[in-house]
Each structure stands twice: as C-alpha cells, then as structure tokens.
Image (tube, rainbow, N blue to C red; front, side, top):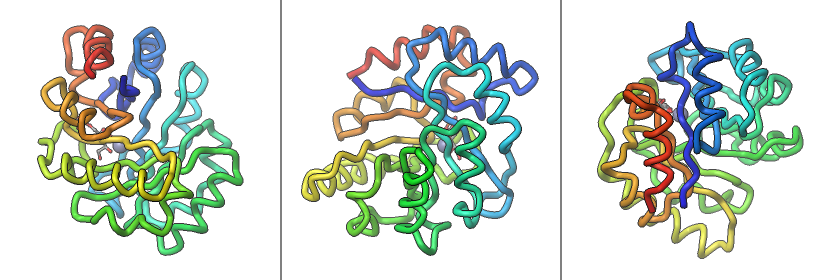
Length: 216
Ligand code: DX5
Ligand code: ZN
C-alpha cells in the first residue's frame, strides 16, 4: 500500500487550517508542501511563515519540496519551521552530496527531486545517501498539469538502481497523479503518491484520499 501525500498547493489558502484538519482526519500519510521561488520554476507559492503555520495544525509528516535555486541556503531554516523531509532538486544543486549530508545532520530525511528531462543515472553515486527520490511526472511549477507517461519507465529504472545499490530509498511520484494512474505507478515501484488537484478539487477530498489509499 502506497503512502499518500496530498499537496497543499491545491488547498484553499484562506482556509488552510480547515484543509490541514481535513488531511489530519483522512487516510493520508504526509503533507506535501511545495516551495517555489519564481527563479527555479516560473511560479511563486509560499515559504517559511506559511509552513510554520501549517506545522501548528498538521499532525502528520511534513514533506517539503523545494523548487528553489541554491536550496542549501535554507536547510536549517526549514528544519526550524517544522520540515520532517526536505527535498532539493538535482538540477538546483551544484554540491548535492554535501546538501544531503547537511539535511540529515539537521535531523531531517533527505530527498532529491528529478525534473522530467533528468535521467535516473545521475543518482547512481548518491542513491545510498538519499531517503526519498521525488520523480517529477510534470514540469514543476504548477498543479493541475497532465501526467507524463514516460514516468512509468523512470520508476522502473529507479527501482532497479535502488535494488542494485542495496539502498532503502523511497520513490515518490509528483504531478498529475489520479486514480487512473496510481495502480500502474505502484506496480512500477512507487512508494509515495503526491496528489494536489485530484484531492482538493474533489467533491469529497476525504473519500478521494481513502480511495487512493486503497489502490494497490
Ligand atoms: C508541482 C508540484 C506538485 C503539485 C502537484 O510543481 O511539485 O506537488 O502540487 O499537483 P497536481 O497533483 O495537481 O499535479
Ligand atoms: Zn511537489
């Protein structure tokens, strides 16, 4: 059974406490929090003060996805506002290995996100240091985009790399996840499914999360 991580990017920002409580009451496992800087991606979402406010209400793991340049500048700050898992982009990290060590030294799980154009192979020499790989199944920056079908092949390749290197890395899929592709993603090797618009635009988000959680 996969872990389900609703993305608060699709929540109602004027009712964040309500939406946090919905996720708390649901079958979801994590909160997925998307930080965008308007430089690494062509959009700006929210940052530390909003995460700190979410942390006051959330009773589940905070999975923070940094879509920002030079993410190493803020590792300790995100720990201080409540992040449990901190994911940096491969494409934004000149010294990825150092960032992974710093995230773990700060007391968080360390994640690496890969854009759709980035091959799995680039993680060969760091996979044993990575707790979570976030495979982008859309180009990062916006919710509600169409799932990129090539992702299935990348999940299989990543799973093979993790097995070959005897790593215990989790595979997270981010972007365009719905009940139409969840089963095939899990079959390919996905451990964590992020879902934003599919959950928050549903008439019954709690039921939608429960349905996703049942898929295997
Ligand atoms: C995209 C973000 C995703 C986004 C997913 O840049 O990283 O987490 O919120 O949204 P949906 O599920 O609507 O594609
Ligand atoms: Zn994300």
